[in-house]
Image 1 (cartoon, rainbow, N blue to C red):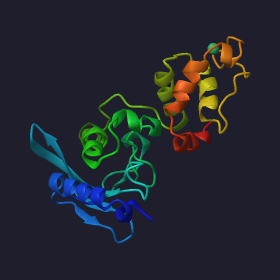
Image 2: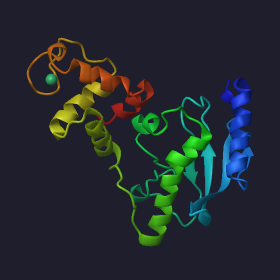
Image 3: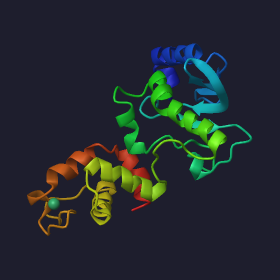
Image 4: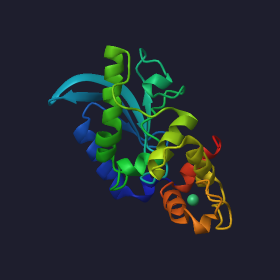
Length: 214
Ligand SMILES: [Zn+2]
């Protein structure tokens, strides 16, 4: 059963948040999922400078996970430089960084302001200047490694890579395994705390998403 039936109060709150912030967007639940589709405005100094037609699909397990955003503008190409996957889905941030952007949990208004709005500004900038404006992560494996480098606060690529394998591995590293830092000590005698602290920050569903890259 989806959150729409299970959590009626949240459903009503999120619907009114959508209506309040995006009066031209239509809400429907025909597919069993909450879909918000229509023009999403970009504001500059309180004035709408541009709109993009998007569809937001709220997952069945909302608010455990964020809505998927689809770009529906015919002129927009689905390319990595625009942070759009080839199915039209938006790449808003690395999955393990979602909770860093939304520390108070996943709610529509925060999602709109902290994840979707910056991406939309990127789209507008791409249309105007042909490039993405903000510092942005690389894609796929490289982007995940950049994210892990920040998470671990380690710069050396080969060390980050060794950590990455253990961070996304199905079974967490055991204390007797060699520490990924390269010290030749056992994990339990070396960077055990760093390793487990970082692993705890990556939800298991995200570890699973990343596993194919490592
Ligand atoms: Zn170590």
